[in-house]
Amino acid sequence: MSSKEPPPLQVSERVREKLLHKHNVTMNEVREAFGARNSNRKFLTDNREDHKTNPPTLWFIAQTDRGRDLKISFIVLDDGVHLKSVYEPNSEEIRIYNKYS
Image 1 (cartoon, helix red, strand yellow):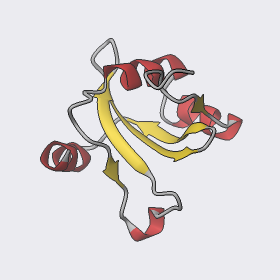
Image 2 (cartoon, rainbow, N blue to C red; image 1 turned 90 degrees about the vertical axis):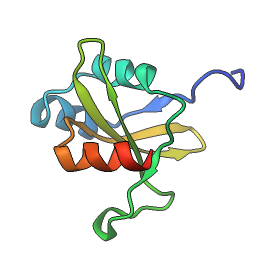
Image 3 (tube, helix red, strand yellow; image 1 turned 120 degrees about the vertical axis):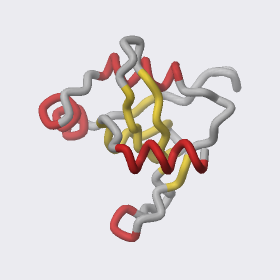
C-alpha cells in the first residue's frame, strides 16, 4: 500500500447493523462521506468524558453524493480506521465542527 492510499476501513458486524437499522446509513454512504471529506479541515477529537477512548475517538462531518450530512466517529489502529458510529449530525455538532475544524 502506498502512502497516498487511505488506511483500510474496519467495520464490525455490530456497527454495520446499528448503522443500517438505527441510523439508516449504508456502507456506501460512509465511503462517499470519507471520499467527500475536505482534507483542509482537521478531524476533531471527542473529548466528552463518556466517549473517551484510547486511542482517541476522532470525528468529522461530510456529505454523501446525494448531499446527506453524516457525522462519522472512528478510531485509528495499526490495521486501519475502525468505524464507531455514523449518523446525521444535529445542529450543535455542525456548529462545533464548523467552528473548530
